[in-house]
Length: 562
Image 1 (cartoon, helix red, strand yellow):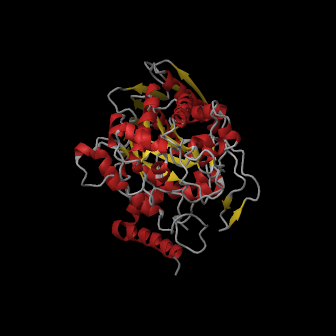
Image 2 (cartoon, rainbow, N blue to C red; image 1 turned 180 degrees about the vertical axis):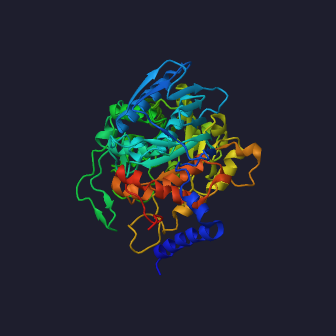
Image 3 (cartoon, helix red, strand yellow; image 1 turned 120 degrees about the vertical axis):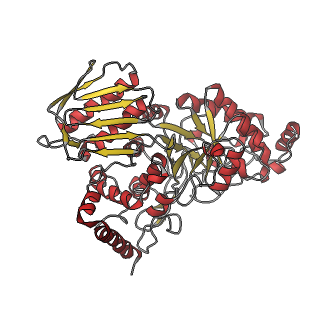
């Protein structure tokens, strides 16, 4: 018996168990429960099953609301709702309307209260983010064309159950990382990712823009980064037919212009998603050194953009060369100017130091700084980049090797409040970082690396991993261990789904691996652990299949009811 058949039978047994334990009435109620993912904190349904019907002409009352961001969000909501339903909405500066927007500074920043009665809808919030999430929840209770912004049938009655929702997220950071270095995704494909993130209330897009396999962002001061670094002479490709093959021609030039960046940043901001750009350094820089070999430890060599998707290069930035460090500063400077969010990501993972140990410039700098190891040069370098970011009012993220690598110096990280993304040995790394007063984001290889296989079956498409990272494994992972003390638990600021593209060369395949596991990580970021319930999550995923289908999204069907 295959694993897939066993799983279908287990789902049927779950439904049968509900009938046996609770009876037909309870099982019917289970099937009719609210379909909002991530699950809200508190929901009170009207006991008589009453509903609010969106009228042919509706008004949104904005009396006393002065925040221009809220006005902009509500304007987009009204236009979207009007287009999707064929109704006509207007915004008015008065106290009463079919929708009443009430700014309440006592609520949490991203929290909201949504009260739907037969006559009207009241939305209470303290910030534009809370207002946005309340309106997302409202639209999620309507037919799926509404939240997707697609025109629906004009004769449809748009009904929402009378309900009171009190809601706020568990974590402030609810992220998704996408690697576009190994395989490039167009601006439109990036926007599709942002759209699905916004439906599930995720608020950070970590954009991995550079690596050995390609430099994907325009830097005005160093044009060869994209002229040379965005093109590889070939590329190893993978598709959903379990096929691995060579592209057979140059891959590129593929990169985002600074105008592309501005448009995508604005698109994300309208969905309350902050973009955290990552330029990986001082390791994973073969594409940069192909363009500027003078910044490597062996400037006499000729470098090429990597064509292999896997592997680890020993060629890294020469941090003992002041010109190379200034190059890095200049890149960070332009990065800060392009991205208005509060943080950028400097990478810092998988950085072999063998070349530093044999390089006279690096050894001289180590001695000058009084460092006990060459690894501590990386810590010093991270501190230098953090200071550049700080000039623009920004903080820095780095991968957990900045904390866990043998010989790492914690002082520059602590002095600059560097935030740590924990992926390899995620929980020990998080414990070490938080014990030093650093904030962490949990994104463990395995359950939150959603580029890996999601099912162990011979007919599963070729992808990373052995196939044990199923939806249930991802959903049931506990990001903050129960034994973490309260004085450290607040340092766990969020969770992130991470997607590397060594084994993915199309948006269609990326979506297949991403969904529905992205929804599971979104729920981990928003919903309190005690409220999580995997069978109910599976029910809500199945209820969202019409939405995913209408949006044209590809997704794993392993947990789809038959």
